[in-house]
Image (cartoon, rainbow, N blue to C red; front, side, top):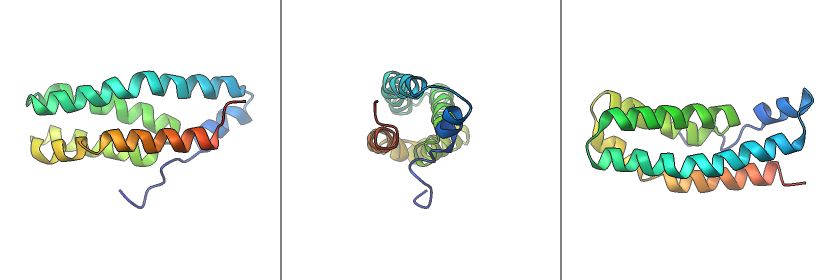
Length: 118
């Protein structure tokens, strides 16, 4: 996981290159701020309760949203949690889920640095 970029700016730059305004990128960052913390909490709560199905669903949704924003390292973490949960290995998934809040903060800093508000 450490070899992955925190942020690959290409997906969002591609949006700008095809004519999307910077306000769309800011809206996407805002959606991440709204969506990611509750999903992170949901993954952690599901794993704590031994609810693999919910953990899988939430981690999968998180992985997709993060990947679309180019947040490779954070998306990979969610993907690893999803795989562990699918395989019934909840203890490793729980350990990785403990890293999610820091990954979120790291991703947000990278996004806001690369795409500052106008």
